[in-house]
Image (tube, rainbow, N blue to C red; front, top):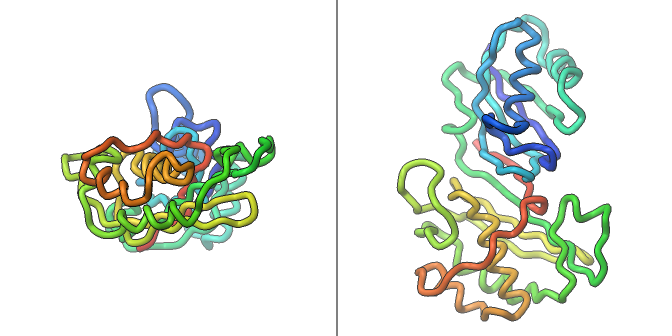
Length: 240
């Protein structure tokens, strides 16, 4: 049976989703758990390539496994074999040619900032703490320059090949109390693209750079901001 699993994980103790030569990965843990069902290696294909320390609520993985019972029972059995920082939310049957990576039409990431004068140890595992006040309206204005099909070389490099063009379908900056959420959806992303976009928008929010300068950053007439730390980033959804 060919399946698609939707899973979430706390990325703090992982070196990323993909199997690494040195270090723990989500894919490695998932394939280790799947091995127990038939004592043979089950190769998985991930829908997104999260970096070390990045979390997920809507990561996907496709794989083929020998299973004759219902998928709800399989999901429970799989979760029983997985460590506590990974949880499979859903498993569904898909056609045998389905690829979690290549069938995806877009991916949605969210970056969280804890914007408060004092650090909160119960929040900063999943958010980047900035004590200075941030101008959300200025950041949202700057974000409008990044929506559309553009060359995003200023914000990262292609994980494969040499095409830096990506289609950003939406990019919003919203405040909810002392938290600020950056939500970005695109057909695909360059390496560290989301974190560099957030880092540049934070420059705007701090008053270091005016919003209109984002156009010059995009055209590489001035450098982009820092790469925001990984713990604030979560892969929220992969759409098909």
